[in-house]
Length: 45
Image 1 (cartoon, rainbow, N blue to C red):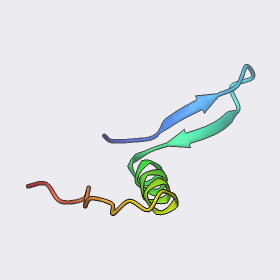
Image 2: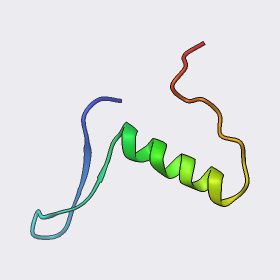
Image 3: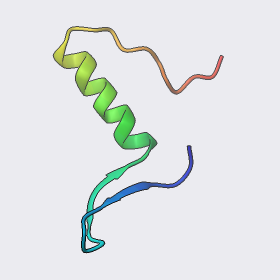
Image 4: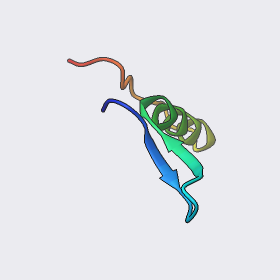
């Protein structure tokens, strides 16, 4: 994935932004909150 995914309101104001960094942060936070050992998503084997 390259670039940012922007979520806009009815007035074209940015209300949220998603990219690989925010996705990874959400994944790691979820794992921590649920006692799950996260997988290394940065390695391409």
